[in-house]
Image (tube, rainbow, N blue to C red; front, side, top):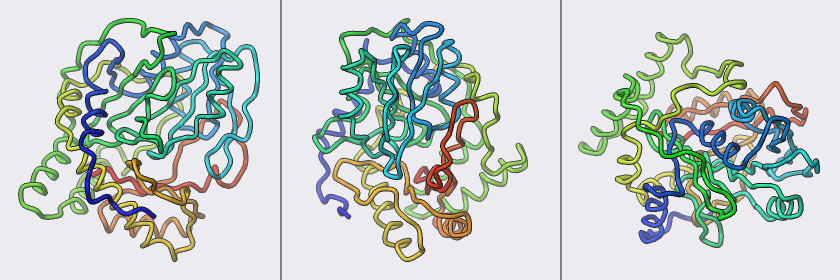
Length: 344
């Protein structure tokens, strides 16, 4: 395992944050699902065309494809989250490759496939804002389009973007006006907890998380509400980005957040090494800003890890909520992946 670097490359972090500033090559949205839908539209995919995506994916991604009247086709992944094979079909016009949990997907096979079959490459970077690959290339910039979901890394309720990286395409439509709806009560509590922690130098996150879960339990009946089947078929509205999104990106202390997440990954990796779990990734290479700590475990072992994570103030849950409208293989690893979420 690599230790947190003593010196942070602030020039790289400034480059990442400037990449996600206002420009003709980026569009902001409320959710990554809307960004995927905009990419599909910009590629020119029509009714009856197909989008190839991993079968190991959150069910909500399917809605972006269905709303464009396109057909989802899937490829399966092995335990290392690498493609087993990529099907060839002349209906396929776009391929989605995923950077899981902040770790860079090896795009070699995907780029070769797209070149040979004249298919657009969409890099799903929902988990990987602030990560770079081994060559120093920012994740989300390696395909024709890059999708980033800031709310998976930053403590905000909504926020995503579509980044255009290819001269072959252009993004349909202009920048959407911001959604001026105020933050939720849970969002305000989370922000207050973080403000107090920073000012007072004390740790309130475990208590705050417990309070947030209680509020969510009372208001919805769930501590972590599962997605309904309707989210697999239609994207929620509005698609407009929140008014605070670009300000939040601009003033993010990227170096501090990267160091915090890397330190947590190393800590949990050492702490859980004797529990019988299997880490999804064997190394935390330089440049990776982990979404969380992903691991394979059966439900009994995972239940104990959930307690450990919650004791530290972090949620731990099984991922993903698999889709029901496409074939999903019965391999055990599809149903045994858990993640400790590092979001405060």
